[in-house]
Image (cartoon, rainbow over all chains, first blue to last red; front, side):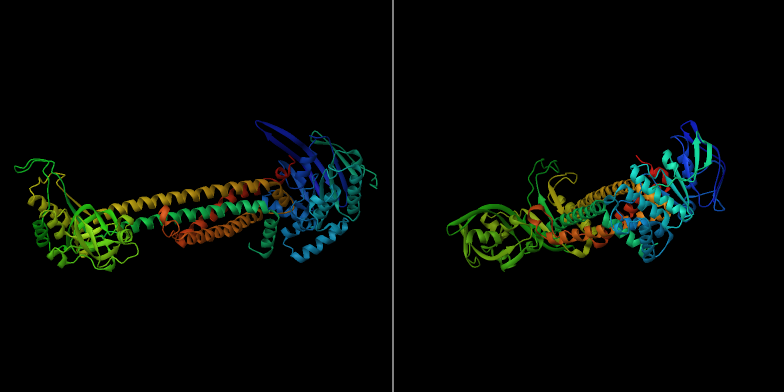
Length: 230
Length: 410
């Protein structure tokens, strides 16, 4: 599903350049639930951003579902993101003036799906994350866990190849974290490829594979016996 | 681009962001409103001005003698020049080609009374054609006529306010008023658009006045109305010739700036035109300034709106919005809001001007303020265009920011 070869990325900081990723080689098979671990500054978020086409790579190659991702302009990146990827963020990033349902329909709006159709589909996905009754509520009326579940529904509604989650439990308490992870595990069980960036050991243990980054290189990459979240 | 879905999306954004919508709409509406009102008031001021100066007939010349300032042909300087009946006749004969009407005006003031009322009024000894020079409008009776002058009748024509002052509710026609120890018969009452002072004047035949003033034939000023068909150039030529002729006749040094003054409405008109165009410049300047302030206002708000929405735009991009669709959405929303509120301001402004009408005429010299509809619409379109342009730049920048930067938590 994902093939990464000799990936380099550096950031210019004034006259200095900060070498963040120093040659990453990394493959993900379809249906894997991968935790990318590392302390802050290890380059894990940068890796996720490049995988998510939110950032460009300097050197190396990146294949996603057999499509080579290169020469991205903004429009092309937007279309790829819309087609291939779903995002879940630490701070949920729901649009605060739109209801849960409207937030979930938004990716479909950008795909050009008709209004009736996208509302039906969005409601179905809200039902999947157990929030059908909350469809007409604004994000401000939802708890943190509920917000993240809306965000997950939004990420999945466009039927992406890969779900990318950046510290999805970072803003949640441990009980809600477990609930959200249980949902992610269930989605994974249905065959979705999922990558999670985290620095929490117990979150990582709930994944089928743990990749550890340190100072821009992969120091450990091993299968894990997936722990049930709940 | 203007699909139904886009419209629904925009209506929803507007409905859920009322403050933001109100702020940008209010700026545009207020900008247009102030522009329309100021521009309208400017036009109203011009109207008053036009009206004021159109009181006197435009084809009129005033010839006024004064003291000379240079010695000439044996005469000393500081000699008092006097125009007399013979001058009037000579001028009207010699310049017959140009002249439509000619009249003396002997001005003084005197106490005039009727029964117990009496008051001091300006009195003018004039001929029949004076009526046309001042655009005097007869309310009752008649003006001084040729017979009055020939027979030196003690007939007078009084202003509307003179009648009001002296006669109260009585009809003045045919009554006798006293003045200078004699009695005078009121043969006419007039009104004049030139203001209250113009309606507190008493006209009498100049020949009668001359007779009373111990048989002098001084005619004071000479007021000439020339034929309108000679045009501005003809009037200037006539003025020049007349001045030359009279200076020669009265032995005034041709280079003497004093001795004889000729004022013509034609040259006044030119000055008035200049004044009016200065007024026009000021109005335009104020208008453009207001519009500029509006443009700056809407630009600021657009920058603020885009800044406030940076995160939302980042989210939209992360879930698949193209830069084009982001810019399109912001512009669509901005143009929609500014158009609606711009036209709202325009119509409120026009309604306000119509409501004002001539309510401000008395105290503020603003008559029938108005704005050309096309000027108003152009101003509105200009503001909409600049609002869109001002929204375009930050929208484009926001659309090109990488989603991770927009989504960064800070």
